[in-house]
Amino acid sequence: MTTHYPIRKSGPFRVAPNLADHDKARAAFQWADIERELDWLPNGGLNIAHEAIDRHVLRGNGQKVAMRWEGKNGEREDVTFEQFRRETNKFADVLRSLGVAKGERVFTFMERLPEIYHAVFGTLKAGCIAGPLFSAFGPDPVRDRLDYSGATVLVTQPELRKKVEHILPALPNLKHVIVVNKNGRSKEPLAKGDLDYDALMAKANQSFVPLTTSRDDYSIMHFTSGTTGKPKGAAHRHNSVIQQYATGKWCLDLHPDDIYWCTADPGWVTGTSYGMIAPWTNGVTQVIYEGGFSARKWYEIIQRYKVTVWYTAPTAIRMLMKSGAALPKSHDLSSLRFIASVGEPLNPEAVMWGLEAFGMGIHDNWWQTETGAIMIANYASMDIRPGSMGRPIPGVEVGIIDGKGNEVPTGEEGDLAVKAGWPSMFRTYWNDEERYRSRFLGDWYITGDRARKDKDGYFWFIGRADDVINSSGHLIGPFEVESVLIEHPAVAEAGVIGKPDPIAMEVVKAFVSLKDGHEPTEQLRHELMRFARSKLAAATAPREIEFVKSLPKTRSGKIMRRLLKARELGLPEGDTSTLEDD
Ligand code: PRX
Image: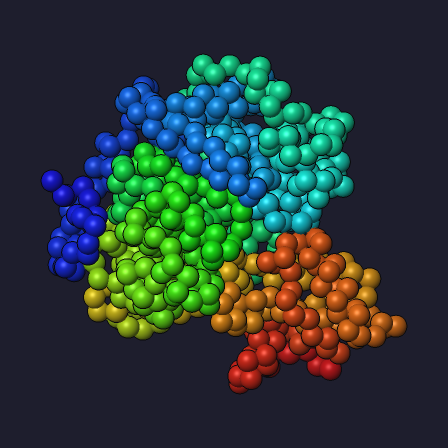
């Protein structure tokens, strides 16, 4: 029977595209079909950790390897589903014994170590909300996110704890700092008041009975940037697992025997939805590599672990392209059978390069933090349309609308919008229901992207509707960067834009005006770059700083980033009638 998986590849090779069949299957599709494939809890509850881990053990697959970890120093560790169940039970029991109650926020600030996966799923078993933070963040983004969410527990590592130690005392809600000293890598003693992860886990009960959560209970919180204000915590529900599980099959073509590798960090939504939930609910073995990008190392990982399905990002593909097609050809990558990417536009050249380097095209798909799971995809069973994000998955309605919520004619540009109510839809921005509501127009959720749809129902990305910067697939709010720059004593004002870049799509460029008495020297430029990098993260800090006498502003005093960008690109400056009078 194929009705449940109408857009799933039937074998290792591409099948002929048949859009009419897809449409028929879409029309007949109901989420209830997928819901029936999950196990649910005995009283009708739903918990992501149960679906991703425990149910495989209950079905007799406990000895299957869930995680094949390779550390940055070459350490190796395999974790079976049974071990995974025990470690996550124990972490949930640790939280219970510390008095952490259901609904509290438990944040991780860690590299890709097995313990981060134990902590996140243990947090879900304890009925708490998991908040994974990107390990490359500097102290300011970490403080903002912990403060905003009122996190009570932070799980981290010695070197990362050191990076943020001065912000921790300023967080009144933070009660426990749990430190994972992986394989005794750090020789330094634990800071006063901190808890040792290994010691806590040694005493914990592996038979902990996970809390019963409902499909509407909060599960994971990820921060995402907007044009104004600090990043907001998009809160998801356990219900998201339904769509994450389904899209793992449909859009990543996961089958039980797959060896899957997702290169995204758990600090970003791809790293949880598709680096944790989708693969493990589908019961596949996942490779986790702690280290960062290196073309040679990445090909070695695919070769060594015989990766079959690979989910990565356009910037990474463009970086691989730069290192040439000879390198992949000098490795045995014959295990690979499906490659997908997300996070930024995947240019047609990159799709085609997949054919040259790996013998297969790269399947672009589209979604965002707020959607929780893939919404639009080039499916395994269809021909890829290079440069297009693909077609909507069954069970969601995507439209291109105008400012009044009406769909625009086929082929015209408009706002990319989704009919509210898909299973993995975020439920709120933490403590900011007003901003949450502002994202809807009638029953459309407005994504913030501009796009168009062609006559076959394929969607084509055009750009962001706002000033948010997308650098290597990471969304960066200009306000966050500007706020850091103006903390420097020499800076009067700062305006931040995304400057087009052939590899990262955009890089952060800052225009800075100085306070009286400061000179725009090379030395100051470098100092500002260092200053921003020490507080933000290398990826978020400005790559370029240009000194200007003053910044263009609206009459109400808002910096006109649009104008800065137009000037940078040498484009017409458009309507400047609201510019301040000089
Ligand atoms: O602008 C779109 C871009 O990334 C945004 C979502 O970013 P984030 O919430 O960080 O989630 C990233 C992981 C899903 C979108 O609003 N984006 C995402 N996928 C694509 C894309 N732009 C073009 N093509 C894509 N396939």
